[in-house]
Amino acid sequence: MATPVKVTVTGAAGQIGYALLFRIASGQLLGADVPVKLSLLEIPQAVKAAEGTAMELDDCAFPLLSGIEITDDANVAFSGANVALLVGAMPRKAGMERGDLLGANGGIFGPQGKAINEHAADDIRVLVVGNPANTNALIAQQNAPDVPAERFTAMTRLDHNRALSQLAAKLQVPVTEIKKMTIWGNHSATQYPDLFHAEVGGKVAADQVDGEWLRETFIPTVAKRGAAIIEARGASSAASAANAAIDHVHDWVNGTDWTSAAVVSDGSYGVPEGLISSFPVRSVDGRYEIIQGLEIDAFSRERIDASVGELAEERDAVRELGLI
Ligand code: NAX
Image 1 (cartoon, rainbow, N blue to C red):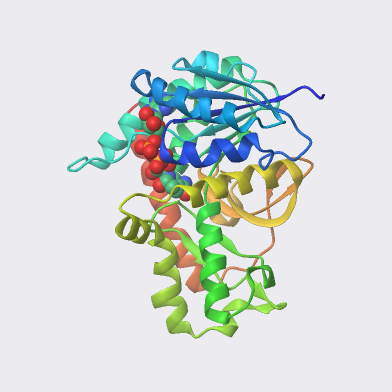
Image 2 (cartoon, rainbow, N blue to C red):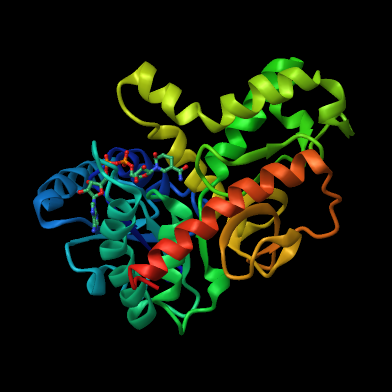
């Protein structure tokens, strides 16, 4: 058997972790012929719950699962890691200011970035899921100066998939008919799902829906879908978030012509260099690259700028806190 790929999952005992681990172990993350070794990182109080999940993983007798490690030490969890899914984060609590939230997450993602820098494998790929995902990814990346910046990404694939599904329902087409969907900016309510570059049946999607639906229904429905799930389910998105994480890493490793991912900006489309912002990306030879050359009209420009402005504010706040 080939050498197993080490996949580290933080927040492994949480609800996304529970939906994610079984899919990784079954081969859906990296492929049906790639053995995996799981490392579950949790805080000390949740290690026991992670052990319970590991017992269930054992009970699946997954042919590709070559081992499970459970730890509360980031240095152990990231040692030799090839893929890191950073899911565990500090949630916003009632009355918490943004600065408090960013500070609390800096206390998680700074040390995890350092541990990745010191201990991960040379080919480490990092996906940050825990919110505020883009800025948590920035904190981790800035604390890992020896790892190429392009290896740090944040998840907007759930937003992308939500946009596909909303548009498919509106136009009564299968999701497979939709190409070139893009989420721009921050994984937050300011994100911009773009129908001006998306295509349905080879024609521009924005031309196939009315402008009012696009502005007043589509954009807010996608951007606020997370809140709608909480309202309906009484808990935040878990299986769909895990599914998006699987899609993100699978496509990163195996290639795709077009998807959305938050990657380190090289200044493309006026997004300040260094911010981790969502772009249209393709993956070639195991690297996400920003798709270039799209024309951005005034409507899209205004929305991209608003979301990117929010990312710049978050970056300035974590800079002031000394986290990057
Ligand atoms: P849960 O609260 O169920 O689980 C989080 C887990 O993380 C807990 O088990 C906790 O003990 C653990 N944890 C906390 N600090 C840790 C640390 N320093 N090291 C290791 N583990 C730690 O949350 P869940 O529903 O699983 O969501 C996880 C994160 O995903 C949240 O931040 C959530 O906001 C975010 N999401 C991001 C999405 C995205 O599209 N980017 C969508 C879904 C989700 O809302």
